[in-house]
Length: 238
Image 1: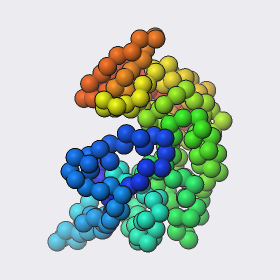
Image 2: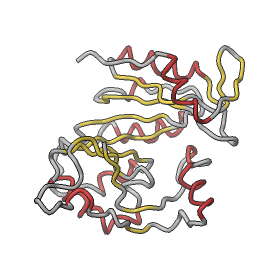
Image 3: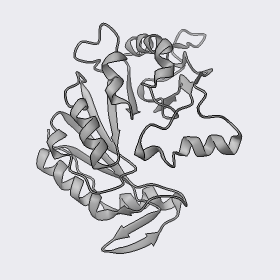
Image 4: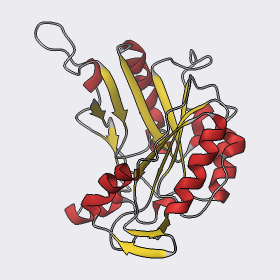
Protein backbone atom coordinates (compact mmCIF):
# COMPACT_ATOMS: atom_id res chain seq x y z
CA UNK A 1 0.00 0.00 0.00
CA UNK A 2 1.09 3.57 -0.66
CA UNK A 3 0.47 7.00 0.85
CA UNK A 4 -0.34 10.04 -1.27
CA UNK A 5 -0.64 13.48 0.30
CA UNK A 6 -0.90 15.99 -2.56
CA UNK A 7 -1.27 18.78 0.00
CA UNK A 8 -0.77 19.15 3.71
CA UNK A 9 -2.40 21.14 6.48
CA UNK A 10 -5.95 21.01 7.82
CA UNK A 11 -8.46 22.92 9.93
CA UNK A 12 -10.53 21.56 12.78
CA UNK A 13 -14.18 21.24 11.79
CA UNK A 14 -15.75 18.54 13.95
CA UNK A 15 -16.00 17.27 17.53
CA UNK A 16 -13.52 14.52 16.75
CA UNK A 17 -10.84 17.06 15.80
CA UNK A 18 -10.26 18.32 19.34
CA UNK A 19 -7.06 16.31 19.92
CA UNK A 20 -6.12 15.76 16.27
CA UNK A 21 -2.77 13.97 15.88
CA UNK A 22 -1.93 16.06 12.80
CA UNK A 23 -2.16 19.31 14.76
CA UNK A 24 -0.22 17.82 17.68
CA UNK A 25 2.58 16.60 15.43
CA UNK A 26 2.82 19.90 13.57
CA UNK A 27 2.93 21.85 16.84
CA UNK A 28 5.97 19.85 17.94
CA UNK A 29 7.69 20.70 14.65
CA UNK A 30 6.70 24.36 14.74
CA UNK A 31 4.48 24.01 11.67
CA UNK A 32 1.21 25.92 11.26
CA UNK A 33 -1.37 23.24 10.40
CA UNK A 34 -3.81 25.90 9.20
CA UNK A 35 -1.58 26.58 6.18
CA UNK A 36 -2.87 24.37 3.35
CA UNK A 37 -0.07 23.92 0.81
CA UNK A 38 0.78 21.57 -2.06
CA UNK A 39 3.49 19.03 -1.38
CA UNK A 40 6.36 17.69 -3.45
CA UNK A 41 4.31 14.49 -3.83
CA UNK A 42 1.48 16.19 -5.73
CA UNK A 43 2.18 14.23 -8.94
CA UNK A 44 3.27 11.04 -7.18
CA UNK A 45 0.71 8.67 -8.83
CA UNK A 46 1.82 9.55 -12.37
CA UNK A 47 5.57 9.93 -11.90
CA UNK A 48 7.49 7.40 -13.98
CA UNK A 49 10.79 5.57 -13.85
CA UNK A 50 13.31 5.72 -16.69
CA UNK A 51 11.84 2.53 -18.12
CA UNK A 52 8.41 4.15 -18.37
CA UNK A 53 6.78 2.28 -15.50
CA UNK A 54 5.00 4.16 -12.73
CA UNK A 55 7.11 4.80 -9.63
CA UNK A 56 4.09 4.20 -7.38
CA UNK A 57 3.13 0.55 -7.45
CA UNK A 58 -0.37 -0.72 -8.10
CA UNK A 59 -2.61 -1.44 -5.11
CA UNK A 60 -4.31 0.46 -2.32
CA UNK A 61 -3.37 4.13 -1.99
CA UNK A 62 -4.20 6.01 1.22
CA UNK A 63 -5.08 9.49 0.02
CA UNK A 64 -4.81 12.66 2.14
CA UNK A 65 -4.26 10.94 5.50
CA UNK A 66 -2.54 14.09 6.80
CA UNK A 67 -5.29 16.43 5.60
CA UNK A 68 -8.80 16.24 4.09
CA UNK A 69 -9.30 15.59 0.38
CA UNK A 70 -12.43 17.78 0.38
CA UNK A 71 -11.00 20.76 2.28
CA UNK A 72 -12.01 24.10 0.75
CA UNK A 73 -8.48 25.44 0.31
CA UNK A 74 -7.66 22.59 -2.09
CA UNK A 75 -10.52 23.24 -4.51
CA UNK A 76 -8.11 24.71 -7.08
CA UNK A 77 -5.97 21.55 -7.10
CA UNK A 78 -8.48 18.72 -6.77
CA UNK A 79 -9.54 18.32 -10.42
CA UNK A 80 -5.94 17.57 -11.36
CA UNK A 81 -5.90 14.90 -8.66
CA UNK A 82 -9.08 13.34 -10.00
CA UNK A 83 -7.38 13.14 -13.41
CA UNK A 84 -4.46 11.25 -11.93
CA UNK A 85 -6.83 8.95 -10.02
CA UNK A 86 -8.66 8.17 -13.24
CA UNK A 87 -5.39 7.44 -15.00
CA UNK A 88 -4.26 4.97 -12.35
CA UNK A 89 -6.98 2.33 -12.73
CA UNK A 90 -4.53 -0.19 -11.28
CA UNK A 91 -4.81 1.57 -7.92
CA UNK A 92 -7.64 1.89 -5.40
CA UNK A 93 -7.64 5.32 -3.78
CA UNK A 94 -9.11 5.52 -0.28
CA UNK A 95 -9.73 8.74 1.60
CA UNK A 96 -11.44 9.77 4.84
CA UNK A 97 -13.35 13.02 5.10
CA UNK A 98 -15.04 15.07 7.79
CA UNK A 99 -16.47 17.29 5.05
CA UNK A 100 -18.83 14.92 3.28
CA UNK A 101 -21.37 17.72 2.76
CA UNK A 102 -18.93 19.20 0.20
CA UNK A 103 -18.70 16.03 -1.86
CA UNK A 104 -21.04 16.92 -4.73
CA UNK A 105 -19.20 20.22 -5.19
CA UNK A 106 -15.82 18.46 -5.38
CA UNK A 107 -16.32 15.69 -7.94
CA UNK A 108 -15.36 15.82 -11.64
CA UNK A 109 -17.93 16.19 -14.42
CA UNK A 110 -17.53 12.54 -15.49
CA UNK A 111 -18.04 11.12 -11.98
CA UNK A 112 -21.45 9.62 -12.83
CA UNK A 113 -22.31 7.05 -10.16
CA UNK A 114 -18.71 6.97 -8.97
CA UNK A 115 -15.24 5.83 -9.97
CA UNK A 116 -14.72 2.12 -9.40
CA UNK A 117 -11.24 2.71 -7.97
CA UNK A 118 -12.27 5.21 -5.25
CA UNK A 119 -13.33 4.35 -1.68
CA UNK A 120 -14.85 7.18 0.37
CA UNK A 121 -14.90 6.94 4.17
CA UNK A 122 -17.22 9.31 6.02
CA UNK A 123 -15.93 10.00 9.53
CA UNK A 124 -18.20 10.46 12.54
CA UNK A 125 -17.76 10.54 16.31
CA UNK A 126 -21.13 11.11 18.02
CA UNK A 127 -24.84 10.82 17.31
CA UNK A 128 -25.22 14.46 16.32
CA UNK A 129 -22.64 14.24 13.55
CA UNK A 130 -23.68 10.71 12.57
CA UNK A 131 -27.19 11.93 11.81
CA UNK A 132 -25.95 15.05 10.07
CA UNK A 133 -23.25 13.49 7.93
CA UNK A 134 -24.61 10.02 7.24
CA UNK A 135 -27.96 11.39 6.09
CA UNK A 136 -25.97 13.11 3.33
CA UNK A 137 -23.55 10.23 2.75
CA UNK A 138 -26.23 7.58 2.10
CA UNK A 139 -27.61 9.46 -0.91
CA UNK A 140 -24.30 10.19 -2.63
CA UNK A 141 -23.24 8.43 -5.87
CA UNK A 142 -20.24 6.50 -4.56
CA UNK A 143 -19.30 2.96 -5.62
CA UNK A 144 -17.52 2.03 -2.39
CA UNK A 145 -18.60 3.54 0.93
CA UNK A 146 -17.12 3.12 4.39
CA UNK A 147 -17.86 4.72 7.76
CA UNK A 148 -15.09 5.52 10.24
CA UNK A 149 -16.25 6.12 13.82
CA UNK A 150 -12.92 7.15 15.29
CA UNK A 151 -12.52 8.64 17.76
CA UNK A 152 -15.91 7.36 18.91
CA UNK A 153 -17.08 9.58 21.75
CA UNK A 154 -20.41 8.04 22.74
CA UNK A 155 -22.84 5.21 22.03
CA UNK A 156 -24.44 5.80 18.63
CA UNK A 157 -27.04 4.24 16.35
CA UNK A 158 -25.97 4.14 12.70
CA UNK A 159 -28.05 1.17 11.58
CA UNK A 160 -30.48 3.32 9.52
CA UNK A 161 -27.52 4.51 7.44
CA UNK A 162 -25.79 1.21 6.70
CA UNK A 163 -27.43 0.31 3.37
CA UNK A 164 -24.76 0.41 0.67
CA UNK A 165 -21.89 0.65 3.18
CA UNK A 166 -19.12 -1.93 2.83
CA UNK A 167 -17.20 -1.43 6.08
CA UNK A 168 -17.50 0.31 9.45
CA UNK A 169 -14.31 1.03 11.41
CA UNK A 170 -14.48 1.90 15.12
CA UNK A 171 -11.79 3.16 17.46
CA UNK A 172 -11.09 5.21 20.55
CA UNK A 173 -9.04 8.34 21.08
CA UNK A 174 -5.35 8.20 22.01
CA UNK A 175 -2.86 10.22 24.08
CA UNK A 176 -2.98 11.78 27.52
CA UNK A 177 -5.84 14.18 26.77
CA UNK A 178 -8.00 11.49 25.18
CA UNK A 179 -11.67 11.20 25.98
CA UNK A 180 -12.80 7.87 27.43
CA UNK A 181 -13.91 5.03 25.17
CA UNK A 182 -16.36 2.36 26.32
CA UNK A 183 -15.90 -1.10 24.81
CA UNK A 184 -19.67 -1.63 24.85
CA UNK A 185 -19.99 1.11 22.21
CA UNK A 186 -17.90 -0.96 19.81
CA UNK A 187 -19.90 -4.10 20.56
CA UNK A 188 -23.14 -2.22 19.94
CA UNK A 189 -22.03 -0.97 16.51
CA UNK A 190 -20.77 -4.46 15.69
CA UNK A 191 -24.25 -5.87 16.31
CA UNK A 192 -25.74 -3.20 14.07
CA UNK A 193 -23.30 -4.21 11.32
CA UNK A 194 -24.05 -7.91 11.77
CA UNK A 195 -27.78 -7.28 11.40
CA UNK A 196 -27.18 -5.32 8.19
CA UNK A 197 -24.44 -7.65 6.90
CA UNK A 198 -21.80 -4.91 6.82
CA UNK A 199 -18.16 -5.66 7.59
CA UNK A 200 -16.92 -4.33 10.94
CA UNK A 201 -13.42 -3.62 12.20
CA UNK A 202 -12.38 -2.66 15.72
CA UNK A 203 -9.31 -0.59 14.84
CA UNK A 204 -8.02 0.58 18.22
CA UNK A 205 -8.91 0.86 21.88
CA UNK A 206 -8.87 4.25 23.58
CA UNK A 207 -6.11 5.40 25.92
CA UNK A 208 -8.78 5.54 28.64
CA UNK A 209 -10.58 2.30 27.93
CA UNK A 210 -13.72 1.30 29.80
CA UNK A 211 -14.80 -2.33 29.96
CA UNK A 212 -17.52 -3.69 32.26
CA UNK A 213 -17.59 -0.38 34.12
CA UNK A 214 -13.87 -0.33 34.91
CA UNK A 215 -11.50 2.18 33.26
CA UNK A 216 -8.02 1.16 32.14
CA UNK A 217 -5.13 3.41 31.08
CA UNK A 218 -3.52 1.84 28.02
CA UNK A 219 -0.27 2.76 26.30
CA UNK A 220 -0.60 4.21 22.81
CA UNK A 221 1.61 1.51 21.33
CA UNK A 222 -0.83 -1.17 22.53
CA UNK A 223 -4.12 0.33 21.35
CA UNK A 224 -4.29 -1.43 17.99
CA UNK A 225 -2.92 -4.77 19.16
CA UNK A 226 -5.37 -4.88 22.08
CA UNK A 227 -8.23 -4.17 19.68
CA UNK A 228 -7.16 -7.07 17.48
CA UNK A 229 -6.95 -9.37 20.49
CA UNK A 230 -10.62 -8.64 21.22
CA UNK A 231 -11.40 -10.71 18.12
CA UNK A 232 -14.69 -8.96 17.33
CA UNK A 233 -14.08 -8.05 13.67
CA UNK A 234 -16.86 -9.19 11.34
CA UNK A 235 -16.63 -10.03 7.65
CA UNK A 236 -19.85 -9.50 5.72
CA UNK A 237 -21.25 -12.37 3.68
CA UNK A 238 -21.39 -11.44 0.00
